[in-house]
Structures are given as C-alpha cells and as structure tokens.
Amino acid sequence: MKNVKLGLLLTAALWVSQSTAAEPTQFTLTSTDIAAGKHMKKAQEFNGFGCTGDDLSPQLSWSGAPKGTVAYAVFAYDPDAPTGSGWWHWQLVNIPADVTSLATGAGKSDKAPQGSQHIENDYGVAGFGGACPPQGHGVHHYQFTVYALSKKLELPANASGALTGYMVKANSLGSASIEALYKRD
Image (cartoon, rainbow, N blue to C red; front, side):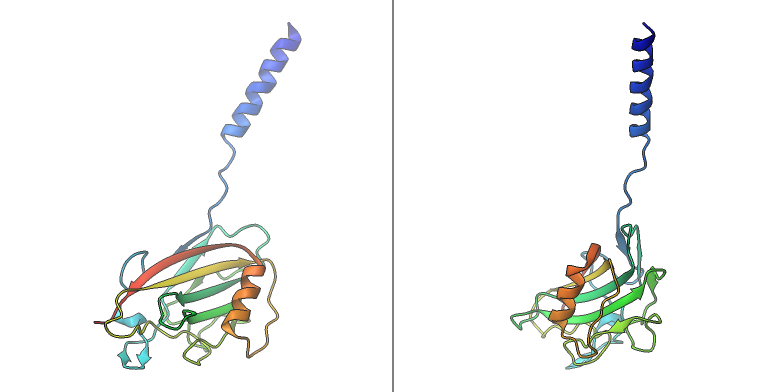
C-alpha cells in the first residue's frame, strides 16, 4: 500500500512539474515604424531612382532569442523586385548579442551598433536603402528579418548579398520577421 501511495505521489508531482513548466520563449520581432501586412510610410522610401522618401530604416526590436545566441543579423529583402533575384535593401551582420533593438535610421553606416558590419545593398551602398518599386508594378512585400547567430561571422568587406545570406542562414539559431508592404502608383 505504501508503494502505491508513493507511486501516486510521484506521478502527481511529475504531472504538476510538467504542467507548470515555462513555455519555451518565442523569438519575436516588433517595430514602431512598420507592421505586418501594412504599407510602409514615405520615411521608409528610398531617396533616388525617382523616389523621394526619407530613406530611413525602421525601428526594430526583438526578444526571445534562442539560447546560445552570440550575435544578430538584420535583413530587409524585396522578393518582388523585377530582377530575377529580388532586391537586398539591407544586410547588417554581427550585431552584438546585448543589442536587442535598432532605432529608426540605424541603417545609416554611422548609426549602426559598434562592432556590426553593413553589407553593400543592391543600390550599391553599405547600409539601408528604402523601398522604391517601379511605378505601376503593384504591391511589393518587404521582409524584415532578424537572425540569431551561433557565432560572429567573418565576412570580407566586399561580401555579396548572396554570400552574406548563405553565411547568416548557415549559422542561424532562429529568426523572426515582419513583412511590410509598399507600392508606387
């Protein structure tokens, strides 16, 4: 009888510990400037190529990074660009692990966190380049993604967007995204 009671107590204790265990943290990305499925403002439009925006990267914050995160990378990509390979608007790598947000405009090379590295975007500039879809091309989808990296990346100063994307994805522990929209009529 004692063994039965002990077994019931152990089973109950195990059940309680499992039912009250903390849920795993979810890696999330938020912004005060952009929102999923919503059109971006003129502030995030490029200034050039016929566009007249402020060319400011949006504010981004993230939380719930996977255990073992050593650094972060932030990408902005337009898969709808009529190029055959999309358009890299922003690739910022080696953001220190203690940085969990970027202010509006951090895509300027002098505003990036210490130790991080901007990769040249498809406009030919190391930093953020805003949305500038061709007029009349319809709605474009802009994927802003933060990646938690298992190590700091060693990339050449002239790394291509494709090489950077490969290295980030090969060393990613997890990612979180916001897909914002933009179009020019």
